[in-house]
Image: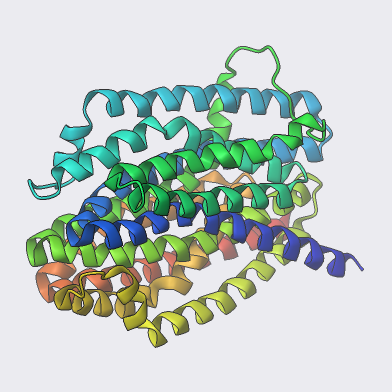
Length: 439
């Protein structure tokens, strides 16, 4: 009976969470589609140069939301209402602080940032516009992530998913309206994307209005221990997103030298589809987080392993389905974004899709395992996996593989790194199981 109940709860939380995280990924994917149709290859290149900054913003939001919501779930499982309120309040404080840190460069130095990311004269104006408004909308993105995590962990996974999907659907509609009938160009794309999290936040208001929430803002100073703990637990979520941004920046630089703006545009297609793939795994991880944290807080170690195994089975099934779809429909997928029928773009992107996405089951394992470690308050192994994926291995591997095999090496370095990290992850997970047995 317990196993059946756990499976039902797992299915409910992960399915709803996947739909929600797919909604987030659709923010940039919708921009990619409509910008490619309205502004062509240069617009697509400009967007791809700016997107890594979105990874930093979204990663920060997930760090605050996942870290704070994990501690909230643990306190809630222990019946500590005051601790839960303190965590939520301090998470809001951090949200305000990081909002300021993102907004300031949007006001002061967006053009310099665009140049630093590799924009040349052909795409500088569009990259600058997208970056500036992306940074100015950062508070909306951050607090949408925070509220999503807390509402989901407070027994509202369906509301969190519904809010995210409505925001994403609004983004698609607004993208079309702003770019085509209204002719607002790339500003229309980012304006639509910036309004979407505001719509999602508005959709979550019933959780507060109907007094269904068990977290509250209280009068308290910033609690250093609480902030440190929440950031530490949420840091792997930040690194997972930042790693995507770092990979994009490094790959953009390498591909720009190899194939120019057309190559960057082709990589933009691969990278934005990758956002969707990673969103699926992020959804599984976020779905199991409240379940694992709750059982961990109640000392149910065996049940935490059961939830993790369910997540692995789901991940492998979805990975097989996604890669098969990419393999069978490579040309039509690229054609959706190749509005100018650029033969070079089509060729580069086709090879990229087939080779780059060999990595997807290994990415899935690494993302979910890092979230699992975070959920049981084992931040160090989660940090190790995330740092290796995002910084230590991927950058030198990309440079080395590109020197040896050119653009093919760029595509292959991603699966190579993810496989290496997965092998280490298997060792760390086995060590955790052995420790639990001894306890």
